[in-house]
Image 1 (tube, rainbow, N blue to C red):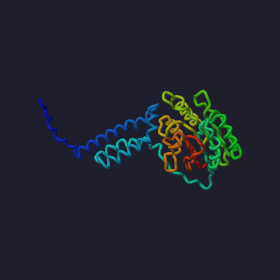
Image 2: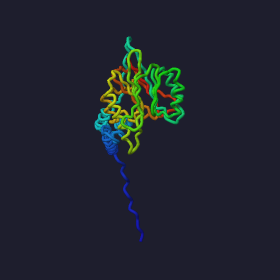
Image 3: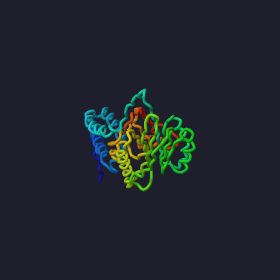
Image 4: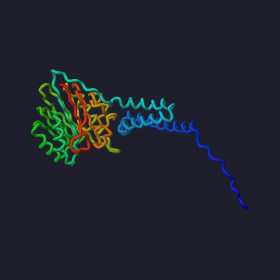
Length: 317
């Protein structure tokens, strides 16, 4: 018996409107799927920490979605506005700021800070390049014995006043006083407080190197961030600056307590001030907070072979 195959009717390709509808559905699903990730950046703990790290990248994703929607599914643009607005609210406290003009009758204080990456052998280069900025105060974190000695040798001539404890150190053109090592709730010292005695005013400067964050290991960092917030709240000094490696992205809810007591110094160079990793900075984990001072400028620079950019901030006294 011979079986004759019945010819199949030709398949009709999807119409243009059907393709556009499918594209619109995919864009809508992706956009709405990003919404809970953005909202998670307000949740304390590991969820908020993880969401805050990817928050800037979500902004880029939303821009791409909006461009695709503009080309292929314009009616879905309004839907993209929902996660975009929520993203904007989440990022608003971490956006760039404006510089303040210095007053003719006041002085200035420039502070640079960098994580020099322990055991990298780059502390000398970092110290020399940061010194070349002309800063008044240099704060270094993640120091080991070798890098601390190297920084001391490189900065001794121009910064005669210094103090170090644990993994943090500070070098100043002006005298230092009231030096105090801080544990901030942990069993080892990774922070300090000193008074920088400028000709115009005394400024309490805190330098901290927060504990690292890894899956299942976040409590140490959160304890330190809570501890520094409590320390500055109790500090009677009129002028306070806190710098260092916080191991927390700008929108991390773990920084909320400190934000409630000091002003987060916004980058004034028109960027988000990302500091890590140095090759392609994706997140700002090195911060500057202040109280009682005008921020004249704040930016980041590359120094040495650290995996962190340095923060450079000028204050009006």
